[in-house]
Image (cartoon, rainbow over all chains, first blue to last red; front, side, top):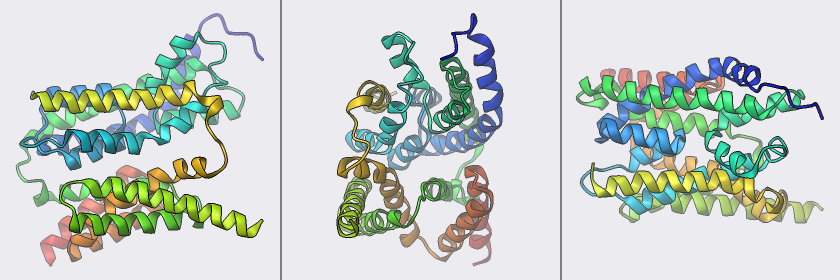
Amino acid sequence: MPSPSPSPWPQFILGMRLFLPVAVSIAAYGLVWGVLAGQAGLSVLEVALMSGLVYAGSSQFVALDLWSPRALPVASIIIATAVINLRMLLMTATLRPLFAGTPRWRATLSMFLVSDEVWAMTMAQSAKGAGSTAFMLGAGALAWLAWTGSTLIGRVLGAVIVDPSTYGLDFAFSAVFLALLFSLWRGRGDLVPWVVGALLAILTAHYVPGQWYVIVGGLGGSLAGALAESWRTRHVA
Amino acid sequence: MSLESWLTILGMALITFAIRAGGFLIAGRLPSTGFVATWLRHIPGAVLASLVAPAVINGGVAEWIASAAAALAYLATRNIFSTIVAGVLAVYLARLWL
């Protein structure tokens, strides 16, 4: 265990510096979200609050997809957000050893800054024996700034676009979800949850009004994946 | 800003922070193997597949071409932004020509 350095700032700055290239790609993604948020009818204040307080890209894309200002499906959006962000439970759990020397309440508050990218970079740095809480906070602070700032800029600039489908921007959602989906591929075990989830979603979308298909497909597909995996291990072992 | 909008955004913020803080606080008691762990691990993929599938199936030829373009772009670059650019550009051009 290295003794704590006298000042956390060098680690904080290092976290920001190493995170910079990732922040650029987050900002590009945030610009698109901001433009689409304007199309969905979110005000500048709503964009600032959602990006600043929720700060979770994929769930915010889903929220926009479900957003309709006239009859806002409050419960569906919150449930969908919970289901999509549930993966973070496993991420912040792995950060426990890194924060062993930090007061519990401060460490818990720091978890607000954990995103997929911040977590991945902090874990990579820790694997090299160089991770620290200040490093994670530096990367996280930059990620938060890049996301909140770029979504606001996108919202303000996007106000000039009248119909997004003219530019194919409506397809941005599908493209983001496809990219995120592919990034999750770990092997053939993923086939069952994906295919079952997709089929359940298609059926539900066809027969049930509203956005329930996300929740039905997400829960049904993941359960099917877990069942298939436990069945396989039982029959192989 | 409407009351529903406040409720939605605050609800999203609270549930997301509860998950982030919750994982950290219950780290020791979270199963790392077994049925529940596998189930948790499969949730994001199943959710994303559920989001994409109806949109792609119910779209037209332009959406099918764009999905293929987005998939290829992701495989080539492993980058979300270039996947968006490829998909949006493909659907724009396909709608222009079809």
